[in-house]
Length: 590
Image (cartoon, rainbow, N blue to C red):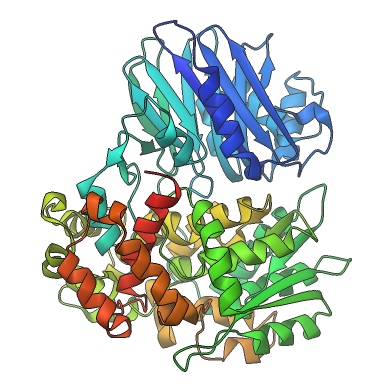
């Protein structure tokens, strides 16, 4: 796991070493083990390295091989790199390292753009083809690894974080009113290729962004999630689907145990993370390291799920580590967690993941995490009602959107008003041909958009801030494709995730499966009181906030009078959503 950056000048002028050096410095936590920089003519690539697959210097990056004319900077993990290496060796390629980065470079030389479809893993990859004068940026199918870029004329820059691009003195980054509309409505998700800033884009999941020798850009999609049965799926019994699911889950977990270092598990106590522990126990011969976190209760809401994580830890005799965080510790860590965000992320559990990652990094470098199961297997409350809805778009919007368009108009300052961007986007996504069933339409949207830019981005940013690699087995693309083929009814039955829960009964104790649905609770940021309320009031009332004018002062005052009366359908604080954005902007001096 690493941080990448680079600049290419298609006018053949000298690239900015300063930009890449600064990017390496900003992205140091993503790769604290070593840093590298390679310049040749009009190209410079940078890299920060976290050693996981190969612990030797032979896998240092950027990786340049003169004989092949290729320069690569790579962030991520290719779980099937050993199998690919064998194929490449059979073709005559020689290897000098034991890592996946060299496999990426030589796979690109052997198969060109087709190589990305061969990779099973999470990745953000930059390739410079010296002979063709071509730059290729590639992102994994589910967008697990981030990749940002900015083009100004004949210059293209890229990085693993938005911050180096936006902070460059000559950047044209400016807050986009349209993206602000998404942030305030679509649960703080700004869908790729957009970012919060005009001028800075994200490579979309499953997509290549390519520039030819003249600096002309094009986009090519190499993977697309299609929902619905395929040939041979008709007539499958529930038991047959469970057999396929169990096999696919086990394969995904095994693949993500590939490393030259120990792999632990973030154990929340829910079905998903507990299932990862149970599957690991089926083949792992050494003790499993597990990690849990809890917070002080607030508003009558419990702040931990230790009852269930402890049950799993005892059942599998794991080496369990448990953290309980006070409100004071929570507030003290918030500025660091916000600084670690490449984009503003409103979910309360960002600080939980930040604190947990800092502790986990003391014990291991890699963890498996259960993100994605709810989106892939239909675990959220808004899926079942879509089955009989006369207007699925309206049903989804009512359950998921943070506020109505009318309330949005009252929320922002006059200069920041935009059309109903999020609403139009939702209609377009539900109109796509890749899914027919309304539930499948929502699952596809959430898996390929919401999941990418909320839970997955949150986990990547917070774990990478500690130099910790997080792997997400539920987002193995083969598992996601299998789930997409399953009838929606098997996923949303009995409140959701039925097929996954029934398969889990083969593996883990039923007490964890039959418990009420939980989530990563951080009550102190949902029920803003005392020091927490003072913290957000100070940010929104600051001179910088008033000068920026993003939000209507009357609306802000209305929220401050009674924060707990203004909770979103997804149980978030509307006040915290506004404050988090302003605090993030101030933290990074925007």
